[in-house]
Amino acid sequence: MKNYLIILISILFIYTSCSTSRSTIANTPEDRNLLAAIKKINKNSSGENAEQTLSNLYRQASTLHLDNIEVYATLAEADKWSKIIREYEALQQLTNVINGSAAAKGILDAPDYTARMEAVREHAASDYYSIGQNQLQNNDKESYRNAYEAFKMAEGFVPGYKDSKKKKEMAFQNSLLNVVVNPVNDNSSYYSNIGWNRYGNSFNDDYLQRNLVRDLGGDYTKSGSARFYTDWEAQRSDITSDLFVDLTWVNLDIPYPYTSNYSRNVSRQIQIGADTSGHTLYQTVTGTLYITRKYFTATGDLESRVTDASTRNTVDSKRYTSQFNWQQEYATYRGDQRALSGSELSMLGSNTFRIPNKEDILTELYQRIYPQVKNGIYNSVRW
Image (cartoon, rainbow, N blue to C red; front, side, top):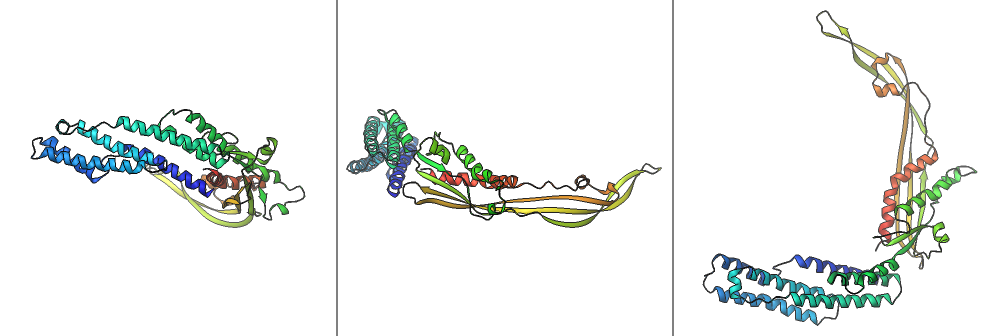
């Protein structure tokens, strides 16, 4: 795995370098000096010694790039091609600037490097195509990933090179990891205390499992690096697993609701009419609310562990914490009800609490923790 990561990082670095080099210009002091001189001669083409100065500066700039190309050409590694192309692109950019200046073009005869760049790209595509072909022979997932990146590089240098697109797709499909998400386990004391029929247990076992498999893409993926299955799906379809995901409640606390009682005085000014002069008259009305409050805080710690199916080594392990706060209040009242606000009025008239059942509470805990668990698994298995 470590060797694969080194190879993959190297290929991605090369690809990035190749892409970013196309927008660079005046990479070296020699390039910048030449461009500054061309800018100056555009303003004053009759400057003293302009021809000699421009010729010397162009020779210095072009010689540096050509020397670099000679050095890079001696390297055995495939990343030499992106370096060579970068040098040719710098030379071509200088040529374009010179040809865009009537004064500079009259002094310098800068060659066009387009054909040479195309030839180098062909060599680069050929090299990466060969790397991809060799990786395919190993017939393992890491090699398929390397092959995918190599064919991708070949396509980047020469779009449509041979059958690199087809080979790239084939390598990608063969590189995909088969990830089995197992049912949730419970190592807390919660389920051991819920009675003979273990109310809610089937919900706990497979609710999160099924949703994760669905939302992570199931057995269909376009841009991901893994297919996901429940344990039952993998067994039914005879899937060879590469990774297992085990989800375990290491702490699950759903307490019985607590009860508290308190009261508060309320008052309000209400309009009762107007005097003979038309001025509004107000009256202060008061009362007392007697409130009963039920509440609890449910918490859970869920551990997610990703295991390599062949070595049984842990690939990744994380713990996520979820919390759900619930409360409900009802009240009785003494005094003038006109002193109550709308929310206070809604507390009157019923002393029945709608306490969430265990399944509702589990749903709330899952919903709060779910995005973290899903993203954590995805980040653990992608390459």
